[in-house]
Length: 225
Image 1 (cartoon, rainbow, N blue to C red):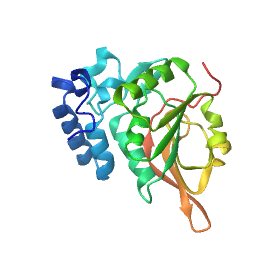
Image 2: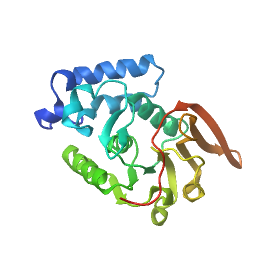
Image 3: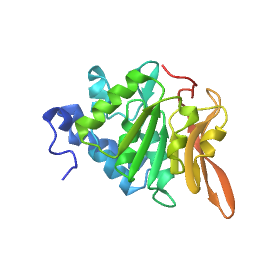
Image 4: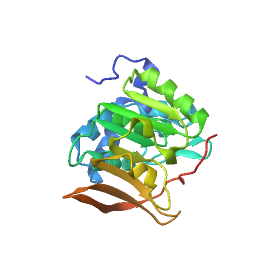
């Protein structure tokens, strides 16, 4: 039974927002190379249509990014899945920091996979909407903060995992400093049109940087709105 089966009919969905639509999305993700069954099952259950504007709800289970206002987007499901399985590939982190809450969808996926998610968003309106969605879904293991994501959440560091949902030209040292020695960081890095999904993970006595695939994300900006 789905973890969300007791929610309202709106949350369960109907037609193009139904469980059948979610199942078809999962089939597409598997066909496109997503292998982690934990990630696939969380995304099969999570009603993505609640994380987009009502006018776009019928497109929620397309494998595409969608606008969420304020010049931001909800990431393509394949990218959310790939980032999540890259984070979990070698070990399951207990405490994860997400930079860029946005719609809240990536944080909600992570909340179904790890013990605690800390998420930081610089745009207050987006964060308010995301918090409302978390409450509606009964997700209790997400802590959120309105702040400049480039600063991370130093008072809660160190984190076993860090995920960025916006791209910097380089990785911020402040975020790397908040990663536990055996932790994993997954982030888009690079200028617009030349971004790559990068993973930093432990390797012997140090860390190794891996390029996973090409991606396209909104830029990681400083300050708060």
